[in-house]
Length: 364
Image (cartoon, rainbow, N blue to C red):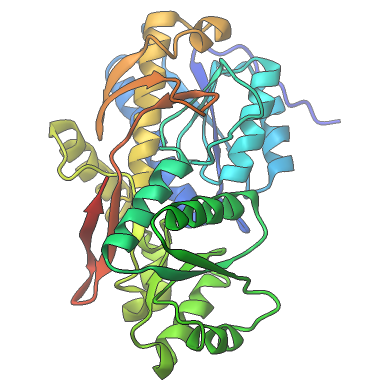
């Protein structure tokens, strides 16, 4: 039997959960980890937590809820003061539920599913905005651009199903229609045939990346019948470098949600430069979420100590400057965890004239 315990350590440990292998969205996981690691580095450069170094204990979730739950149990046994991270909403939901059960505070960096837990959880907090808020803002963008009848290509998942419901309700309230299409068992070409006769003016990709999202985009772009069809990806796939690498010009002019301000303050400017150097590319909003996660947890550890119960009780009191604004937590209506209400939200796309540049199309 393998001994998974660690010897006593002078460091303060935070458990980090990130998707670093398939079928997880690896590009997002790397961005998230870069932000977490930069945050830890800067805390330690500033003297650590009361003289003790901050240590990140990283576990790969691979977008697998069962694997993530096992990681929570392992990290709890290793004595981490808190848990951080995760990108995939379904995985984060498992992490939040298990962390609450075993009494380890958890700050969710990136997942947006409204119901991150089935019941109120005092030890769980989140930086990313709730899906219902972000996707309604995305719906406002589509409606404002004149799209009243849209289609969604979707796959079975509580995350995609929730997003579809948010859009359907929002469009219905404004006299619009959402047509639901599944990519299975359709081929991308068969999906194009259905779109050509549907009367929709936009197709939203509520599917996995890179498969089948890349194949669908390629098929739609190549189909002369669909030349005027807007492709959208509210989950944010087009922001990450992998999207541009796989699709090139075909990946431009596809609006997505991201959680960045119109302009950064001094902290955001400095962190953006440091993240760019660390990643070798422009950082996405996910990297900033990682950095801000550590900023919040470091402030809690300095003011509340390393006792898990004291940390969990500190969410409504902690307040700190993040890269995207002043962060404080509350309980918005309908949200059963401590929520930063709200991070800035943009609808953006890649500029067809310069695919490496992003255009902000709408803010909320």
